Length: 229
Length: 229
DNA sequence: TGCTAGCTGTGAAACGCATAACAGCGTTCG
DNA sequence: CGAACGCTGTTATGCGTTTCACAGCTAGCA
Image 1 (tube, rainbow over the protein chains, first blue to last red):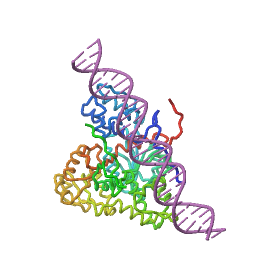
Image 2: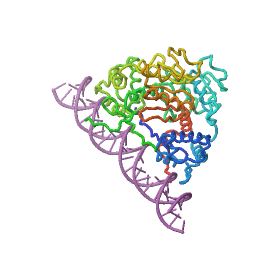
Image 3: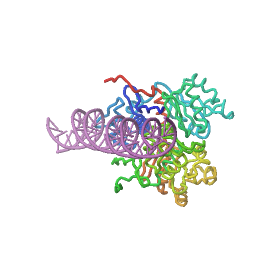
Image 4: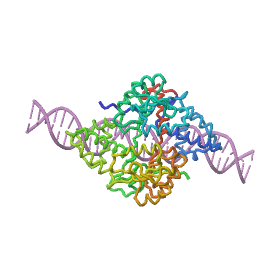
């Protein structure tokens, strides 16, 4: 009954890469963009690692997945490395994203993506509130959720963000899967039950804040401690 | 120069518990609350595990950290287990939280915490915009960021959420640390550099969405594969 | 009342990831 | 011109977490 948990390793390009590596590569690329913007030409592994808050060894290991080799004397060429990571991570063309739920959080997400991330664009919004549908929001058309299936298929959207109340999230997710979505980013504080071929990522703000509050009550980095039996 | 990464194990109560365990305990408790609300009295490990999307063995192992033992025949008593997890996780009294940045995201966070989470309360908001400070927002006073130090110390706030633009995040974090904050939840897409005794959690929506988009392009659960040399 | 079934709690193995250690190489300085 | 230095790419080691496997127990039933 309880399905065995599938491996977190997924096939990417030619190699098989862990989720953690993908996240770090995304992070490295963003830092490289900032470096390029500030005019930096070359960077050493220990510098980039410090900016990403990882060890230099881990950084180099992660970069093994990307087809690029740095120079022992100059380090990595910022722009070239950025492009190589992009070649590994990026979709062949712009990827369309849908947003469900145009409340406070939904609008914050819109603001978040204004301008940047040309390869990821919110091209459709959905809601249930009549006051919010059938108009433009930040240059993006909004529809009633009942139109999701049609719109998503027409526009070839396979990624969606869920920013609706917890009670509605599972139903929305089912609708989206039915509409052909391949992966989801869920902000509602409910664990979604979905078919195994749909990738789901949960951003659970409530849980995360509780975690942060929990760790506020202790001395952070406790290494040594008298072992009590 | 590159400081060695400290252990992810932190001391909690009498035992030393991993971050992952804490997150899962928080999740279990929320599910138990829902179960109690819906009138369920008892629950078996495999049922609760299925709801939390973990294996039963892992659930039982996590519960070893809590001082509670279930019955082999009835399973766990929902209300009692919830209380035991609470005794392990919860602060002795209400914990005060500050919010910096009252933009779209900040307001979404306010909406998120309205009513629920009595033990975690946003008691002060900060911003830099004169139009947003020195008034009440959702029953919570908002101040200019320059007053952070005074207000935080007076009210004994040691947890804060950062919801400001990336460019301002580091400066805000420094101010908060100066004001005595013990742990931070950061929504800005910058890696904060902070002293090692301050606990930081990053919720990086941009990175997460890129990750989700990345995994939308592959067949999710690929176990077998012809090994290519 | 003795036996079976099914669950919990926990010791032990397995797996994956991060860290440490090493080989290769281009530059630089004696 | 040679040798030492410092960085990269890669292989081995260690550690933490997850999974496996089993002992113990309680209710139910013949």
